[in-house]
Length: 160
Image (cartoon, rainbow, N blue to C red; front, top):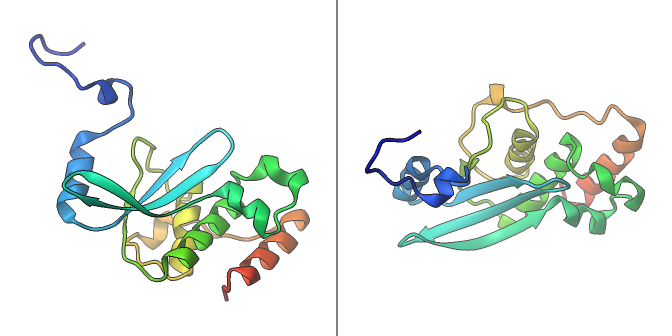
């Protein structure tokens, strides 16, 4: 339990907000790349803060890949690493070369995870995010059904 006399904030009790991390990011004054996972998709947003009021600059979801050529029969796999990488590329193509810092929220910091696949896609498409190379996964479309999709969507986004 917690100490008597100290009230823990509701969003901290619900494991939704780490107030110490949020305060340090707000003090930096930089745009934040916020990545959140749902049961079916990954959501990424570039957010700027002014007097603790957040303003979304650009936001994308892995669901947006369906409009870029991701097959509808593979809509259940919009959380795999390839989809996350392409979602990061989509975000960076809309953001056009901004600087950002990564905001994981209450997600665990696991090297090579799907969140870092999204970050790698954003970095490869031109977004400037400070991140160590060891935490970024290697993205390869080994599976036949994903390799064609991967290349086709990458071309649409104008990637190398």
